[in-house]
Length: 170
Image (cartoon, rainbow, N blue to C red; front, top):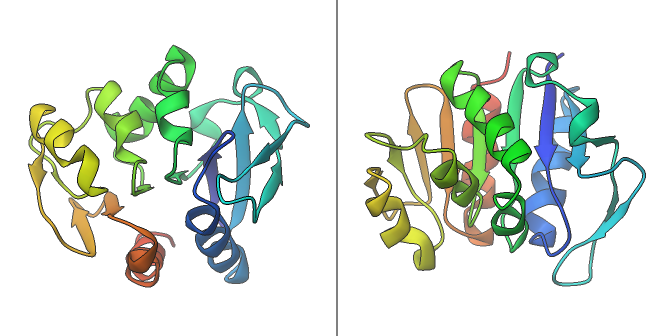
């Protein structure tokens, strides 16, 4: 079954990680968490979830994974300040591997300069940023682009986000 790289750090939107991760694992996919260092515990911004990190970014290669999952919250904004995470995300986009980004998740893809000409959505506060990145922005629950990229706006969109993401995994 596919291995899904999940880039995550403190202040992620709790349910935007926990719900998709539970559903992905529930059908047999392996969800692997990646941050700056393995073994670190990161906390969701709502205080409802904690995640113990499986691998540090220097210990993994994007080639080892079948898909990339970017939960929202403040986590993607913090991760995009680190070029290692930007390059990791860019690899998935360049190689046309599935990428699932919800809420503020697309911020990492903006910094990777990977959204030009792509159909996307995101949280309302980043829609202008997505436009400036050259993306075709849609205000919809879920947008699928090129049978590769799945984006959603907010926690209310999680069921549609999960459904479309699972369609792209074998």
